[in-house]
Length: 155
Image (cartoon, rainbow, N blue to C red):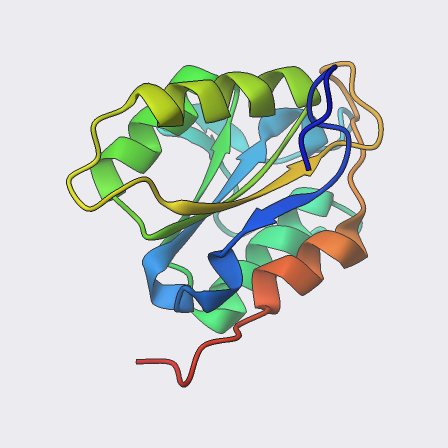
């Protein structure tokens, strides 16, 4: 659902039919707790390797994607890195969590990109509270989307 003033709700566009191994998860680094996060920012985004912080939304969503076999996850400080990540991996499906502005810009970039096998199916999940620090997302709703597969069988 797109409204006149932008993305205001979760949008899914065929992503549930894409096998997990052909999907990527995009998360904003602003979901990390501002206090006590052990993640390190790298050129590839926030590196959460070894993190077991159960109260962190990034940990919970990344874990859900890993458990079902996603191709990859990117925890990005912004849209350019996320767009590069998607272009390099050419997934069939993208689940993106971000503020409305970043989701709209990402969707616009995707529409302008020349895709070899067509634009990936997408699920766009807006933050409940944005502001670039200690943001919030509906973790339960995002986990359902991450874990939902409506195809015949996983390859």
